[in-house]
Structure formats: C-alpha cells, structure tokens
Length: 266
Image (cartoon, rainbow, N blue to C red):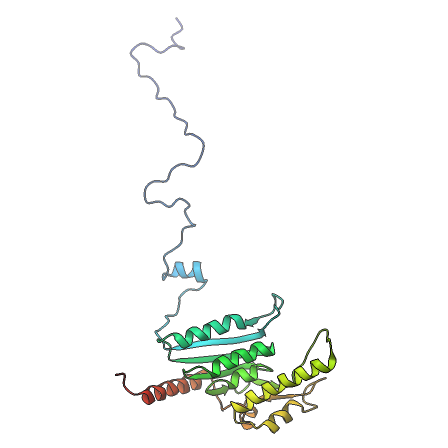
C-alpha cells in the first residue's frame, strides 16, 4: 500500500499557503502611507530641523515697525544675471504701498547694504519713501553707494555704521550710445535730478555735493569720493552715526511724536 503518498482518512489536512497579490500592502489604520516622508509638526525640534535646518526658532513678537532691506544691486529695467544679489524695484514698490495702507504698521526701518544700480529705479524707490506719511528711518550697513545715497537720505532720519561707506560719483553709462549729444544732455538732466533730491532731503549743500561727486584722485580710474562712517555725517549727507539700537530708538521716538501730534482719536 502506498500509504506514504496518500493521507489517511480522518487525518488533519495541511493549511494551504496564501500568496498575497503583487503590489503595495495596505497600511494599518493610523500609519502613514510613506513612513519618514510625512511632515513633522512645526514648533518641535524635529520639525524645525526638517523645515528650517535649525534647532530652535526664535519667537517673533508683535511689532508695529516694518523692516525693509535694500541689498546687493538695485535691479531696474534690465534683468541682472542670476548670480548677482539684487533688489528688484518692482518688488519694493508694492511693499511700500502695503506699508502705507496697513494700519498696524506705524513706522518703517530701511536697512541698506547696496552697491547702487539702476538710477531711475533707485529714484523711484526714494520718491516712494520720502512721500510716505509714516515715520521712516534708514540705516546704512556695509555700504550705501551710488544711487543708494538718495535712498538713504529719503528717510526722515538716517544713520550710518562706523565702518560703513558711501560712494558719491557722477552717473555713468555703459553699452552702445546712439546720439552722443542727446545722450549727454539726458544724463546731465538725470544728474541734476539726483543732486536736487539729495540736497533737498539732507543737510549737504549742492556745491559741496557736486564737489564730492567730481573730485579726482579719490577713486581709482574714476572720479568721486568715498565717505566712511562719520565722514558722511560731517559733510551733512547722513544725520548720525549709529547701529540698529539707535535706529529703532529714533524710529520709536518719531512714532510717539506723530501719535502725540495727532491727539486722541475721537
């Protein structure tokens, strides 16, 4: 008898093995579909590391002061190369409009570290700042060169760090020039616009500013003047030497003075 090949009657049958169908298995309830890829809760150490790359996130207190930075090169009608750090005037102008309309913002702190850039774009930013009804304070850190000078003096009060510099030089043009006499006349009128704006919104006189602008021997292969820290204050271009603490203190003082001048709300 071939009893080794056939089970005996009445003996327990082996349990068949069930092969799961191909494809991903459904996760149990409460377990994420892709473990390790789900966002961690913000505010925790793990969440801050994943989202911000830092251990702890400093708390942002409620403030009635808006800080606006002008850094790198001021980009105007032409788009600069992507490796250049730029401040786009089409981004700054809407921010200034929003600051003017926002009732929660009482003052503007303008921080500059710029090499200059497009003249018309810089003048547009400066004209927007000087026409604001809210108190404004500017702080030059590192440098406020070229067309950054009108932006710095457009605030109600201006500060410059001890080691910061400001370069005063004539308007320059590069590239193809069509019609030299007409182009020179246009640049001369634009130069007058810059000189008039700076002298009207600072303590420097027009003859002194032009003398600094056309001084020879200060800049290599160029004409102009580099002012460092207190030198910008001595010629009347900037109001005072100071840092972030002095700038915020002055801005809060201007905000308080504006509130007291308006009187209590009826």
